Length: 452
Image (tube, rainbow, N blue to C red; front, side, top):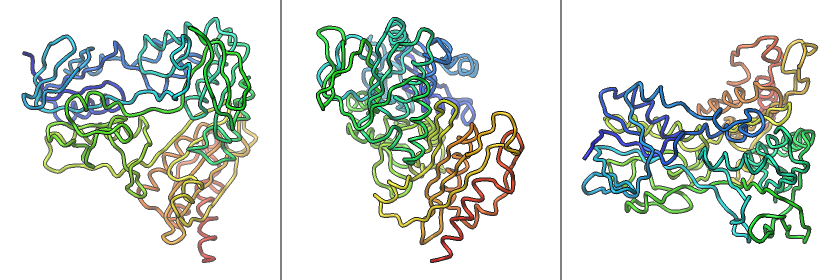
């Protein structure tokens, strides 16, 4: 029987981050990464396979960096972890002995409980290159495509399908909420994203609910709850994901379908030799410590690093909880956010003050391709003055501004702190140093907080 020091089960964001951390921290340990797909996809790059990249193979994470560092990669399915004998049992009956395990089996696409989800040419988004190629093959001759779900995956998929060579004649995006991206972004920023998406040729249908997917063996259309029927020869479902706990349950590890594999803040399961990280692991919110459903590659990477670092360490690192930092680009607009939205803050009973600022994303604003109205919106808790959320809409620097906001939230920076922080600026890259949106928005909030 073969053995390894550390078996990482799952090869996406958490597994890759864990393997990288093992290489750096414990170079003398034998690491084996096991995945049930031939290649690892860049998870957040999946929508761009169809429009921008125009090929599945262009979105694959290479194995060479890990293999050159001594990580063994096995493309097989683990059926069960024999915790008593410390062995992985593969579906072909082979065994692999281990000292430690990092369980990073990710998530499974959530399929709505409606008739027709099992019809041919109805797809969800899976991190399997073979399956993603099947979607590509179905989209090429399609004339009418319906995307169900207006979150990040749905919006990005709809836009990228519109950018395909010989794109479908009709692309409709169906979202049950009043706006796309509404769970993560401010409402007015959502409206901006919808305007950009409409320019690409996507018809957006919000406040709509799908009743059923029609067809006998192959999809022919979608029926809405209000009785309307929409023609479709391909349907793509992107309405979220659920933690993949199948292996955890088969191995008698505590887990539940809603939250995932039960872990401590150090990412340890009830078995001290098994840690779990990524979408399959349970989460708690950064702000209130309550169970949390935010599942992102950035969170998975952080957890993978924490889990790997704790395997053989006497001083354990802990996750501080899921903050939620998002970014996307629709058309010519980038939208990013970190922390609470105004809606979420109200739901959680947070008394907050808003500071906003609008300026060109370059200086002077007459520079080519400048976006005149790049906007930053910051939320500060009234009592403490601490930043609890921030939202950006404008140019490509929006994502990095949201990252700065995420750091400031985690560091409990106040409006007064941020208003006088020192930042890098450049005419082609940022707003003017005297009109830098993050500083001005914080200063506006500080003045509001001073009013009491």
